Length: 267
Image (cartoon, rainbow, N blue to C red; front, top):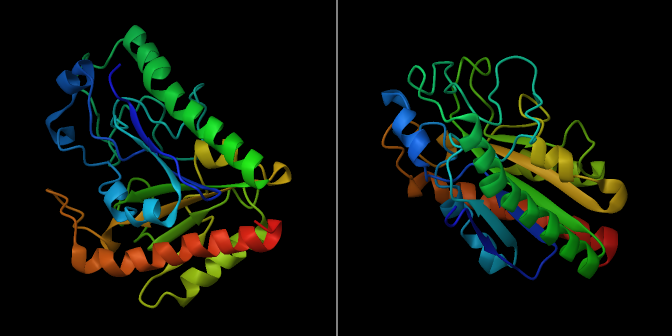
């Protein structure tokens, strides 16, 4: 494979993961997609741009280069379902609206998909694993922020309109409850925004697998409604008039997480 991820190493005990921001396709996936999928509608659009302040803050950042239509980096390598009801797997076969992702008989072969697992999925997770280990060794703990976004209205996946900020801690298992409480406090004070903790999105594989508060690794997923920073219809334009305020709240959330870590661990 060519470049499968981008990685920036920071100087704070915080790693931000962006597993669904990629836009690259392999030839097999590109050739097989149905017309409705060619615009990559289920992408976590503009997440690297939305979090572009995080590098200056001092966070480490890892972002996918390949689309989730190739392989979903937020699913386990055994493809065990994470959510009850409608969801997508390690190798997505449907769009978020439930329609087929590939033309009849034109999905990648099992051999090609094994190549995606070894060449795309494993390098991404190796990067997360090694950076969390480095942070924990240096600081005594590590914070993992899994950054996502999604259209605010997808009837096939959830009822009604999604809250703006959807925090997931795997029902409290992936981070210290005091950290979750502090993050909820920030969201509660953010005027004009709604939020929920462990609602429809409780955290995917990355949050669940790496979050280990007993061993001082605290993971949180944020599923952000795309209506807070962009147009949710093609061509999925970034909206600076919306994004600027949303970035302020994101910065407050990351600062709150780091402040909690410093108070808890003294670093």
